[in-house]
Image (cartoon, rainbow, N blue to C red; front, side):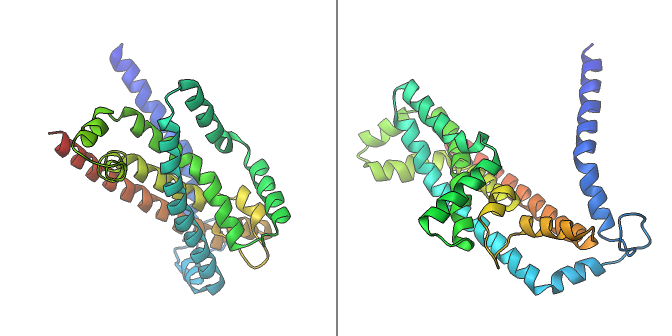
Length: 267
């Protein structure tokens, strides 16, 4: 019975991964098609990638996208850490759960509503749509992600660690930097990389708050797709997918390194 259940689980997982990754692999495969369409594969070529890297406008859009992603993730991680500390500091469970629910509103709200809300806010506040408006929006929807990933590490941390640090004469700043932050480092890494991928991937919110002359990769891919099917889209999507895979690998390696350090400290 156990073997049958195990075999069924393996088959189920294989089918799920095939369903998820087959369209992506299909897209990457046709990015090397010399035929120029998705209809039939006529030969191998790198022309679409050459055109991609020669496009200076697209290069600026890539720089904009990564600048927004990195800056918003850094700010959101810093704010999210202190937000998680603030929520964790409340002793009453009802108050803590209320604050956590408010934190999660941006995560469960439809992106269209969030984008429209930011658009109205920036219009009323006189903020010009462009780099600043996109950056502020990405920071705002990334903070709850960081809080949600950092808070569990704070919850599982033994309070006696802080009590011991106080008994040894440590002040609040030393407790934060020498005890709390090293312990929650895995959560910080997870929050930062998740915020980074959310920023790179976001379309709906970004679409509402971009102005004339400013764009990101997700908005640009959408614009290219509306003009008609082109294998430039395949090449651009393939590069973005491979970069995301690289991010996952970097995060995995950092997580493994952090876990080894934690195990070393516990020993």
